[in-house]
Length: 501
Image (cartoon, rainbow, N blue to C red):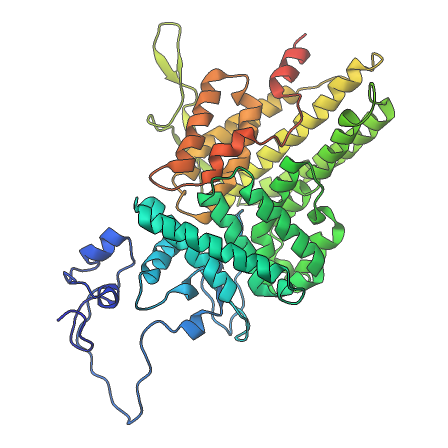
């Protein structure tokens, strides 16, 4: 008898939704269709009664509401976080928002399966208020479900909830005391993820990232030392840096205090990815200085200003190359070469009108963390090399100032191709919140090889369309990536053309 407490053998989800369960093992058909994690049908059990009322066996919202799921293995309130490769994307919020007796638990379960299936639980203070984050996550999960299941009514309900949550967030931000709360910090990151996945505005995620940075600046780096706050900071850093790049603004993350103080209590979490992000955080300032030199000065820029900027950029490049040597010496920098899949590999016409793949093998990384770290390195390398050699071209054009270009165009091309050969691995991971880490590298690969090679340019555009609205996952911001301009206006095709003279 379905829905009658104590008698039905239906699985937990079917009992909660009050639908008939087919009792199939290990997963019932209804859970498979709804993409829910089925625990299997219930059997008989014997319970020794001790005279006390039994505890409620449903979801304990009061207990789970104090957890902040992040990437990694599960822990308890009495155990320490096991350090693990952190994925390059903002935080993950989730399991605590399941509510019994409504469709919200279905939406939330789906979102957890969609985004958070590799999460670990960080236990925060039992007194922590998560009301605002709850609203934001329910809006996100409802919208994701509506989009994927092609349910217009559910989608509209999710967007309505987003608007309601956004108003509540703005009210909280206007309160000096409430704006400092962990709940507000967490809610902003959830809303940024919403904009990246489902937002229609090109700059929606940028506004949230820049707003989060202003809030962090107000709180100060010491406030981010508690582990839950540190985890949020680690997840948010990539989007904050990328937002600073495309808006030509400096970022507080380039300051020494923000690179060190948050990790004082948990130094083991400063893994290779976080060390790499310390270097990437220095890049936005270089482009701010470049804009000042080329955009605001009258006439030709001064040699001294260009040389000073070139020296700063070269120092960041040296730091990046030093990091690369350390990364290459570890077992983490490992991948296997596997045959390139015919369905997703770009083809080029040969002399005899036959089509041949542009590359024969693709990179199969040992983890998404490895893939994210590797592609971020190559994207940053392209970014810096384009800037440096653009400055060298400008110096060469001024007063006959001669600088030998060196083999940089080859390095730019090689890094661009390596990113392209990593795309297949990321496409298999789109149902993971960390998979958006490929978007910035794809943008830089387009700058490195897509503009000068029509075949690769069209292929990269197609991959971004697939990422923005594919059936296996979606990041809506991917449709805007090529319109973002994180690099100088001197692109690799001009560099290669000029250096070949």
